[in-house]
Image 1 (cartoon, rainbow, N blue to C red):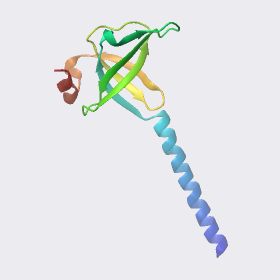
Image 2 (tube, helix red, strand yellow; image 1 turned 90 degrees about the horizontal axis):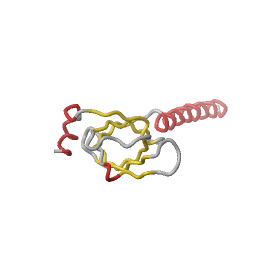
Image 3 (cartoon, rainbow, N blue to C red; image 1 turned 30 degrees about the vertical axis):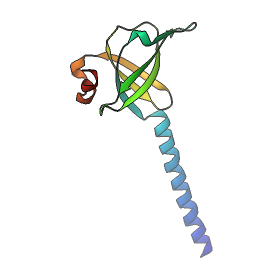
Image 4 (cartoon, helix red, strand yellow; image 1 turned 90 degrees about the vertical axis):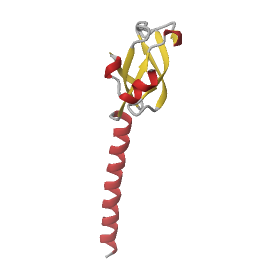
Length: 114
């Protein structure tokens, strides 16, 4: 009887470990968030080395209007007052960005920039 209990507890432990590993892996490598920001070239810092010479630290908003300060690097200075959609990963920061028109921003984000 004790042998069966040990096997059941071991099986449950293995299942929980697999679920935990998958959850951590998903949070670290696959969980993306989308934020929106407006370029302000007064907040750009010119770096001395590397291909990514411009570092922006800007206020950004998710689709619900929640604010977060985000830092990302680019190889060139971006167009003043352009709106960007940022794909942000928990572990890597900004994974990609693209310019978007104001009317393509979520409603809550548009409210922040009016």
